[in-house]
Length: 217
Image (cartoon, rainbow, N blue to C red; front, side, top):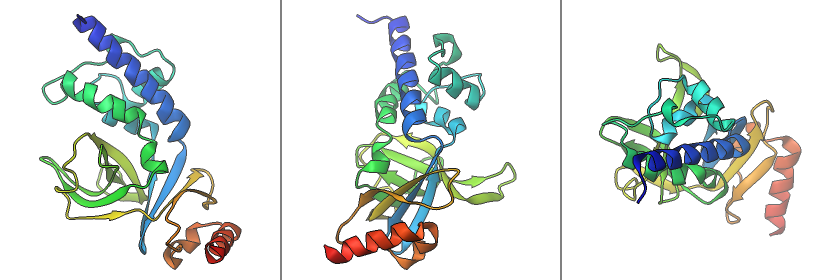
């Protein structure tokens, strides 16, 4: 039977593995989600990784991520609490390792997801787990830019019921954060055309290529 030490070490390894996935697939990139004529962009800052693990720490969010990414996170550098119990982390971490699926698969966009403590203006779900997003604001509540950031990872099947509305995504684009316009497409509904509302965000030659391909199909 696993001891408390064994269980905590298993969580530690899951956090380290999740940090590697986050680093390789999400950090440093921006994703554009398009549904109908609506759209939003999501960035995955390294200091938001901690929010998604379900554990507490006395480290700064950046130090926690840095240690996990380097494989140097120790069992003494995180703990559980009433707000963030062991069972919660154990449930979240397998989904955190799968988080890139929300950028490469056909997902649902939820609006106004209500929880006990917060209402998420936008969320992304694959019906197994849901990523609650927050606007990028400063400490005074002023919006920094139009990007949305990951705030909470919820593992439940009732997110749609707790939302005011939900729509299936039509397109998901990706780019390096340092690049100004998108020219890579991860998810597309072949029955849909790219709306004019996002044309200014797409590299013109890429936009034309996609439009021409759609016409031929």
